[in-house]
Length: 362
Image 1: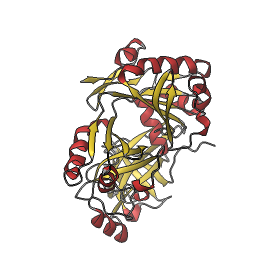
Image 2: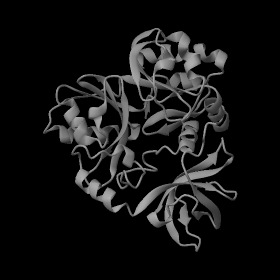
Image 3: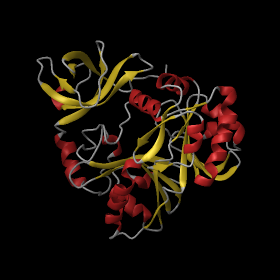
Image 4: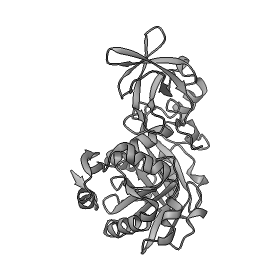
């Protein structure tokens, strides 16, 4: 089990620690509902240093990224980031990731912790013909996510950068919390705004301490992975291993918007055909119309009790106080407002398909 540079800090704060993607991670501090509300209404900080980071550099860097990702990275200028995925050769997804253009010929790929080794091998396989410079810096860097509507105001005192000027999916490399050359990225996985901060492991304790100090007047709290999951699910963001995996295509998962056929990429021909014909199943969002909490693996049934799919993610939404979930169903049952049933143990519980996001910040 690996530790992050802040593991002892989390333990000292009384965090409940659990194994996650090979790391010892804080799942909660005070409780998922309190932490969830802190991020929705104020500001919270997550240690997500288990995520992986690869540097792709040199004159062939863009060529390699274009080959292995579905989105069009040629659209990135320095200081911009892009959500994308790595398609496999059989129509599924190796991983979803964020691509940052750090310099003209330097790109940072941020991948899921559980897939670091798999992604590295997959990209390396295609790099044999391209020969870009690849560096896996995952073990040297830490990542903090400062999320919530008060994030800009709370963090402004510890940087010379005008945080309010950094647009969504843009970033700067500048000073933060007394450290030079930190990536300050207006990205996140919560839907409540904020930043992700990339720094070296040797710097992250100082950053963490100054973030909590600066945010004290704004009610900042450390937040665990349990609330990260409820926050992302309320937005309908896919979780790798649940909602997307090696068997789900981008078009089944509703990720057609990051799949651009302006270039050739791994398995692009087959995916273009699927786009044209339409997928046979789709990822849908649903909310419970009766009492019940959907969980991953529960059967999804039609009005006649026939199984039409399975739940991939589900929870009791802290913001909405009702059960919500994602799941794959055959395409004919995927329209919004279609009534469905979720098999919860021996009971069939009424639900309906809804538009994302579940949580709307009104």
